[in-house]
Length: 287
Ligand SMILES: Cc1cc2nc3c(=O)[nH]c(=O)nc-3n(C[C@H](O)[C@H](O)[C@H](O)COP(=O)(O)OP(=O)(O)OC[C@H]3O[C@@H](n4cnc5c(N)ncnc54)[C@H](O)[C@@H]3O)c2cc1C
Image (cartoon, rainbow, N blue to C red; front, side, top):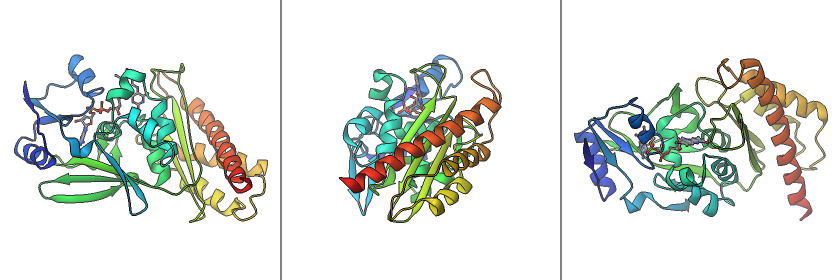
């Protein structure tokens, strides 16, 4: 098997254009599993781990730009304040070994409906920066996932970075698995409050062919929250929010859980994360 190891981003884009049958590899925590189990037999690998310029993050124009080479461990340690929802989700991925190798870009590259980075990226209103020798484009996270393990990425494109708006608003992530670690989520949910825009963002994982948001739940909450007075939440609003999140899902029955269980779990996760996020928002005012 060929191994191409570019040292710069332009070299990587050129290699991608010239040899589209090379499979990009970042942390390898999905790619190597697929190769070892014989699910994939690529002609070769395009190793992106030697490229320093994508292994960094920065805040640019009010958004966090997370380079494709950043690992979950770095997101957890460096970005908990700027992208709290993504950092929370990162903390739940695999094990320390997986988090030391695995990247958010690799999660996007695999585009699994169960990818843990996806719900917080949807909730935050993130965009994916993709590039080829033809140029660079920004794809909203909401448009990135096109089917089960399918994405808007063209064959000659690579993910360069993910842009996450920095709002200072509370963000939460919660997931349910068959045990506490090293499992694929049975259902997951992310919530982001955007106080300046009086907007709410949501992300649902493992409960539809693609990660998706719950627009009706977002609209209900944005209208019901007492953004100015920060009054306590009415129980009826919390309950309705959970119901609308569950309705937005399109889950399947599988070995990990039934569709009915997934819907129920989502309603519970949505209610919990809303309570936590709103409590945080109310405390922010008091401090
Ligand atoms: C034991 C174990 C536990 C796991 N637990 C979890 C978990 O709890 N939650 C979870 O979400 N995932 C989990 N995973 C899956 C995996 O760790 C994640 O999907 C991870 O984000 C993949 O990142 P990576 O850098 O290792 O990607 P890789 O395996 O290197 O690549 C994954 C895919 O993305 C593509 N790709 C990588 N980088 C780019 C780029 N810059 N541009 C374009 N395409 C690119 C690759 O070609 C490939 O198709 C687990 C995996 C294992 C083995």
